[in-house]
Image (cartoon, rainbow, N blue to C red; front, side, top):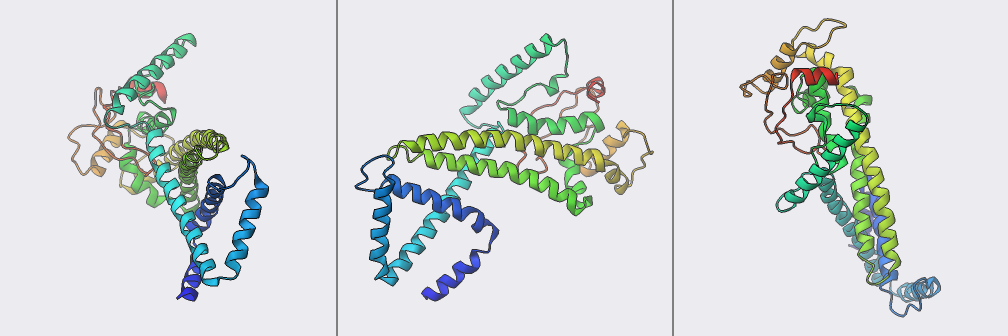
Length: 318
């Protein structure tokens, strides 16, 4: 049974997720063990920790079955820590996207109003004017950077990103798909890093330097989250810029070379992809209201707000 278990663990070690997650998980387990180590004489008593580890290894050396059990428990602990960090990372990514449910909505509304007012003041100081749809609409910068991708595509082409993206994805070559997926993975890894920051900070009651580790990882995760969100949104937008003509022709619509997509054609495409369920011209009509639709990736949150975008606003951004 033990041989079979070790063989299965060996095969699993080749799995991409396990290789990526088990190392940080075992490292956290080691730090946690040091933090709660009894008999430690100081905060950085590494010598005492090494001696305790050596004593434990000597004890396990004479008990093979116990050594295997402890090794299996260490691997299990590392895997559980990695799963916990990923779960925390998913929750933190949701918070970064700025769609806060329940009582947090009031806090989100207050932060959004503050960010919007600050943006208006900066634009006024620079003597600039932007359509309201491009002003902050989420309590976080990351949420607005992801959210505005849909609005920029709609302003330039009149197309609904949530509708066209699954079809556009099927037309992309392997290199283009890899670029989008890599940008999305960077954002997901930033969330997981923030999850590790929470786990390290949780060790603070037993070992106060863990607070510094947590804060350092949190700052790095926030910087990575902002940069990766900008990269992902820019990559998605660039993909639409470079390949939307191919999609238009693949859907059976004519598009003249060197000319922009006409508003009537964009409306027809949106209605076709929506299977005629829209009931109104989308994105290009004055006062059009968008229905709730999911964004084209698990990283992109759903957008249920009402867009009030006019044709002049689209022209101003284009």
